[in-house]
Image 1: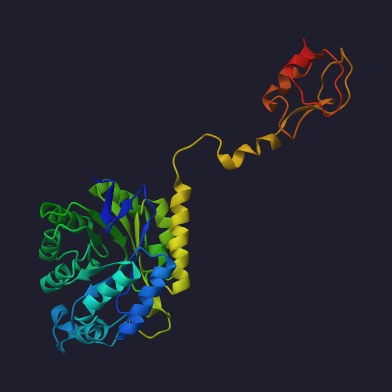
Image 2: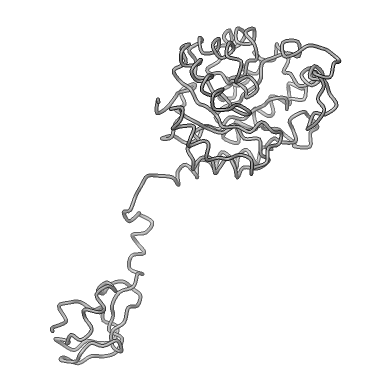
Length: 350
């Protein structure tokens, strides 16, 4: 496994802060200025990248009224697939405008293609990376085509079983993909945190020998922050201006302040992981003096015997360590010792 990949100059891996992708998805609500505003907010919040989705309703499905093409449950119940994608897709000519806006803002932009035409368009726009959506993880010809670009690839695994994930990774690697991150994902909108099984992330790293991360569809940040402790080096979340905006994905997306918190808190979680360490930290060094140690708690004359009445383990920590208490009891003082004196072996004799 490669220890890191690089997207547009940003190193991504366990030795770097989590890479946060703000998924624009359908939250443009057919208004390019809204899309631009989401991008501006994502940049301000500290996201590393904006991701869009490149498709049209005609490349995604067909207009058909049979039961197969109707959505009968969930967030988009009552629509046909064609109607959903017609309302949600990002107009084809917006792709270039979104990429240009990203350059203006200084934020990385890349996309999820859903067919070969989309890959061709994105190659013309010099996309720095590609994302394969969970629903397309079984589309091995698409993965092959994306891998052949030689660009870094991110694959989401929602709904995929172990064999399907293995097939997708094998196809990517055999066709030229040398920089790959595989995202654990639950394809529910929104997805309950208790169904996320985040321990899968660490297992995925070991089982498939890949970098791993999280595509998070929960409605807060707790799951994403927790995933960092389990090895996630990349976090993807849908973002919007207003969760009540009425768009297809608004209801399970983060608002700007929440995205800023995600960027901040995932970095803090990564910093807190640090390394295996049993040494005293810098923050602790000044507090060592407040540990317990052995002190004279009653005035003692030379020749007096030390007992549990005149020696105790108390704070601060300038005397002998408390582990010596039993060995010093019964010894005699060589000299007078005043109450409040930190006990030292040189003051004693048997």
